Amino acid sequence: MLNKRDNIMWKMFIDDERMPSKSDFIIVRSVNEAQEKISQLGVPNFISFDHDLGDNVPTGADLAKWLVEKDLDHNGDFLPKDFSFYVHSQNPIGKGNIEGLLNQYLEVKNKEVSKKPKFK
Image (cartoon, rainbow, N blue to C red; front, side, top):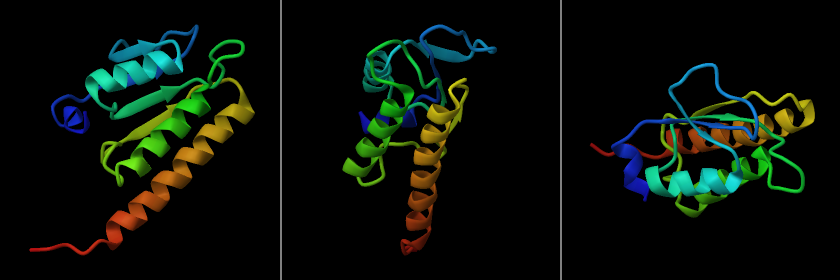
């Protein structure tokens, strides 16, 4: 699965109700659907997150946590090198949680990558 992203660049929009303003997104309505799409295509280069995806179901924050855990499990090789995201959620606390988690993780990951010796 990890090499699938080398062949395809794509963007995901996760939201249980809204539609993206641009049509170049693959739309998913749940965390489960997002995970299935990622298992098919690899991790998208860009994800636009909603936090609240319905009552008593996993949230956009749960997807963000899953992505970080998978990246850690794969020694930093799960997320694409150019991975980026946006949180379009109207839930300010949920938005802050997703942004905080992913921004902190990506900042630390990028520092670790820059510390690795480069062999010629």
